[in-house]
Image (cartoon, rainbow, N blue to C red; front, side):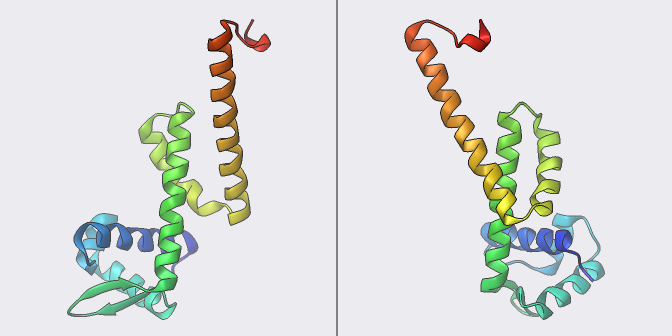
Amino acid sequence: MLGKEKTENYLRTILNIQEICGTARSIDVAEALNVSKPTVSVAIHELEKKGFIIFTDSNGLFLTKKGMETASKIKSRYHFLFSMLVQMGVNEADAKKDACKMEHCMCDESFHVLRDLFYFFLEHSESTAQTANNTGKCSSKSQ
């Protein structure tokens, strides 16, 4: 049985392959995830049972509406978390690993709060820096 993290990784991988190639095949998923084709076969059948994908022998793997929504959400989370970590000074290799872990472990509410807080700080740090540059003065904290 696939856990939440593996399910989301498979769905995101299928979405990425579909965006590049138009359709995803089991072999493409196996190569992308660096797992065996039998492992992918077991996962594919479970994803199909859960209503995330439709699998056809001739045409490959297709995300259902439910699968597309889940894959898009996870992909969006990953990109935000990766970008946030890099902007905060984390090197890209670590940011990739950490964003991949973080995308799975928080509920929607926590993710939205973190995202909103980060954007709030970005907006306010830019306006504070701009004000300091315009006046030629630094904020009282940095003096």
